[in-house]
Image 1 (cartoon, rainbow, N blue to C red):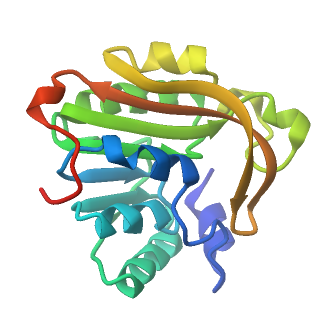
Image 2 (cartoon, rainbow, N blue to C red; image 1 turned 120 degrees about the horizontal axis):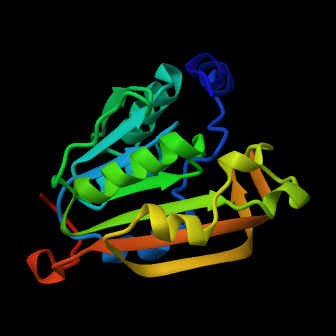
Length: 211
């Protein structure tokens, strides 16, 4: 969606997706080795602030200037620093071999762009780095508790396994779960969850902390 849409949606004092990190992200954070973390389509910054509090150097990318301003505000309130970059993922390039984790929650992109971003994400990880994703599946259309209404923007585990070729899947599942994230995501939801690692774990063992 266009940046203007998200600027308008985020233009409220409320953090519409809440200020707590995504539940799945929290559950797999222990698999993230020390080093820099990239949060894609990060919006208001809740995951970015979470990783910064864990000692990581974090970059949050989003097309919305308004959303990222709130991300800075949230990080400041938590006593941490998050670097923000206003960019459309259609033109953003992920730095190869640099990131200890790349995080994308609810980043629903057109299929061709999604495949390109995911290829870049695989290449962007350091050895031992992990890619973390949660998104809605086509089953979400019947539940109607959030997410896009366009089936093409929704994801399946089968497609993600193909798009993330080269990564070892530590977690890969489709499930229904109750989502409670601010006012925008509430209710029973059909989701796909992925935590996948680039090879050579010995080069970067999971740890809480710094670059």
